[in-house]
Image 1 (spheres, rainbow, N blue to C red):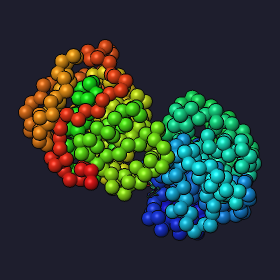
Image 2: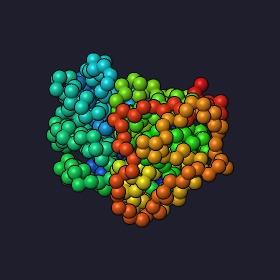
Image 3: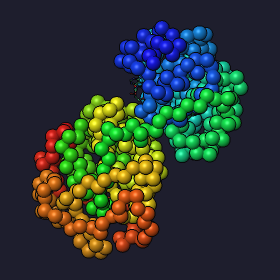
Image 4: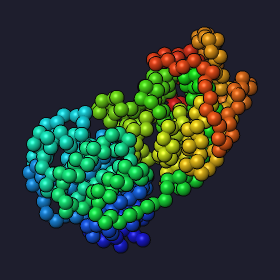
Length: 452
Ligand code: AMP
C-alpha cells in the first residue's frame, strides 16, 4: 500500500514525500481512508506506530476546504502533556508545510495572552491540553461550536492523569455532528465507556502491540540493591559497562527519584538532564531540545513526562525501577529499537520489585534474561557500612572482569510467582541525600558520556 492510494490530497502527498515517508504504517493505512470519509475512528495504537500522522494527514486534507473564523477553531486535538502537544504542532509544521494554516498551541505553563491572540485571529487547528483549553473557554476567549473534527490522543494517559472529567466536559461543548478520532494504547473500562458515550459507530483499528515489534530490542534485567544510594551506584556501573551508548533514557517511577538521579549523575560527571512534571515548561522544552540535538546524552524521565515523546534513535533505555503499571514497561522500552535499529533496554530489579516484575513478564509474555553485572556495589546492611570515604573513590572504570562482588541473595527466576516479603532494609528516607562518594571520575568515562 502506498500513500497515494489512501485518498489524501496532492498537497498532503507532496509534504509526505518531503518528510521522507515512503510507506504508510499499519495505523495510517487503516485509519486514513475512514477518516477521510468523515467516520469516527477508534485506534488502539502506541507511540511509535505513526499515529500522529494518522490523524494529522486526513485533517490537513479536510482543512483545505473552508477557512477559520475568529475565536472559532475548526479542529481540536487534545493531548495529555505539553510536550506531546508541542510535538503534534511540529508534525503540522512538517506535514502541513504546503497549507497556510493557523495552528494554535494551548498548553499550560506559558503565557495565556499570546495564545488568546492567536485564537482571536482564527485558528484552523487547536492543539491543547485539557486544562488550558477549558481556561480559554471559561474566559470567553474561545468558542467550540465550530469544531468539525476532534482528536483525543493518548486517552489512557489522560485517564492516568485524571483528565477524564475535563474530556467529558469538552466533548459536551462540541457540536454533536463533529468527527472524532480517538487513540489509546490500552482500553481500560473507563476508556471503553468514554468511547461508547462520545463516538458514533467508530471504525475500530488495532495495530499490533509494540511488544511484538520489539525483536530489535535486547532486553535484560539487572539485579539491584534496594538501598537508594547503592542502587544509584549500580546504575552508574551499569551505564559504564555499555560502550556503545549513543544516547539513553533513564526512567524512574517517581519525580523525586528523577530529580535525585539527575543531580547524582551530573555530580558524577555524566552529561545528563531531567524531565519531570514539576519542572516548568521552558526548562522541560530546553532539556528535550538539548537531548534531541545530542547535546545531552542521558535523559532521566518519569513516565508521565516522557509519554509519547518522539525521540528518534535512542540507543539505550535504563529502567531505574520496574514500572508500577506494567504497560509503562512497553512504552519505556519502545523508546529504543525503533525502525528496526538495535536497541538495549535494561531494567534494574530489587527483591522488593518482584511483584511488579511478574506483572511485566505476564504482560509481554516473554522471559527476560539477567545481565550479569559484576562489581555491583553491594547493598549495605542496615545500620552498617556508612558512606564510603572519599579516598576510596579512585576506582577505575570497572566493567565486566572486575573481582567478584559480594553477591546479594538471588532474585527469583523470571516468571516465577513470589510472595512479597518485608524488606530487610530501613525504609527509604523521604529526602535522600545525593551520594557523592562512589567516585567515578569524568576522566574515567567514555567521552560521549561526559558533560561538556
Ligand atoms: P508517532 O507514533 O506518531 O509518534 O510517530 C513516530 C515516528 O515515526 C515519528 O518520528 C514520525 O515522524 C515517524 N513516522 C510516522 N509515519 C511514518 C511513515 N509512514 N514512515 C516513516 N516514518 C514515519
